[in-house]
Length: 459
Ligand code: NAD
Image 1 (cartoon, protein in one colour):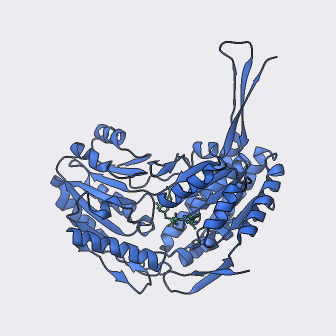
Image 2 (image 1 turned 180 degrees about the horizontal axis):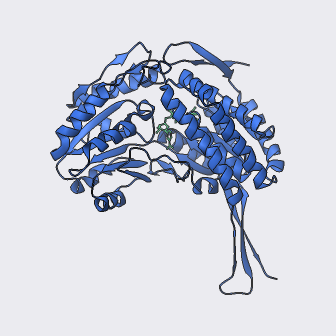
Image 3 (image 1 turned 90 degrees about the vertical axis):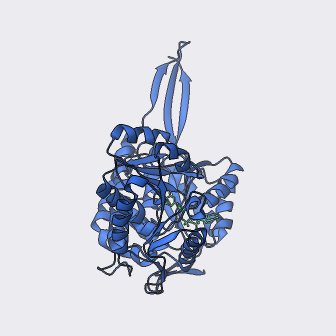
């Protein structure tokens, strides 16, 4: 069997190898998952809940080791990786609590003697495809609700970061997940195997997190067999600083919204709209904070910014900044690549950016913050909405009513109002427009893995 070598983005060292599964092996795994589904779906919710609870506890007990593994394959800073493990584990805890709350409904028909009985059933084998930026959390955000619902899982991990996926599968096995209920597959390149799985008739659910480009392609492939789809796709978040904002709070929020995970987050603030009255104060304070970040190997204690995951990502971010500069943007800090760590890119702030610049219209997915000066916040709402994505927005204002009115006007699935972080396992995470279909987390996340069955009866 051929193997994929996993390279540490900071050092270039090979950290491990995983199988490069063939199309046939992926289809065999789907057969196994379909067989395992027959018994897994009939386990009592409490049994599934307790397995998930044990998996949560194991992840928390092993937080340090899991976090170091994430750093070695993804490059992020250890503190970000530890936060990711805690966040990822919370999906197992949350869905252990949701597993016993799969509800139904019973009503008399409005115009008849019969009753309308509504129950929920697990969808079936779920193909869960995850990106490299949160290798633990994007997996548990899917596996948690799938197992709670009674589905079996094929986890197709990103080729850059499969070691964490295998480590999570091991945690689940030790927590009591039976053989065949969760399997990791790592075909590389993945296109042929994923297409074969979607057309096999064995996969009943596709839960995908990744780019809008690949999401759109997979939706078209899923159409053939009418596979139930949930899509968590790209983002392009506006970060709006009103004239009445608490600027220190806005800078704190900007550092989280922009720099969590080194900017490689779908929720990352991608374009900063700052009112002219507070532009200088916000920019000066933000540039000071961004300039103080220390680029290095994520495992070094002095490091506060890790490298990008690959040479390809480094060149993509560098090209976006070069293009912005040729469009007329000014580099206030950063703007440089680093070779030590490999694939590094300095924390960068760009001023003088305009709405039509490609750095505003595209997802940066790196440590670069373009600032656009606006003269009137409310009149700029069309600019905030003038992108293809609609995942999340951030607003800073001391006037809560104004903030809520702005939140209502923004075409995004989520809004951080005076907060730079919205992710919470108990909340419905997801976007509108090209950012996706469906929600993960909260109660909605469980419903994504359930079918509704209605029985009409009378007695
Ligand atoms: P990507 O779309 O390139 O890859 C995502 C996954 O799809 C990987 O596992 C990859 O191997 C697989 N894949 C790629 N091409 C495929 C194909 N032709 N057929 C089948 N599978 C294929 O995305 P990425 O670069 O790994 O991740 C970054 C993207 O993910 C960004 O756009 C980011 O915004 C998005 N993302 C979204 C969320 C969210 O919740 N909305 C969360 C994290 C990341």
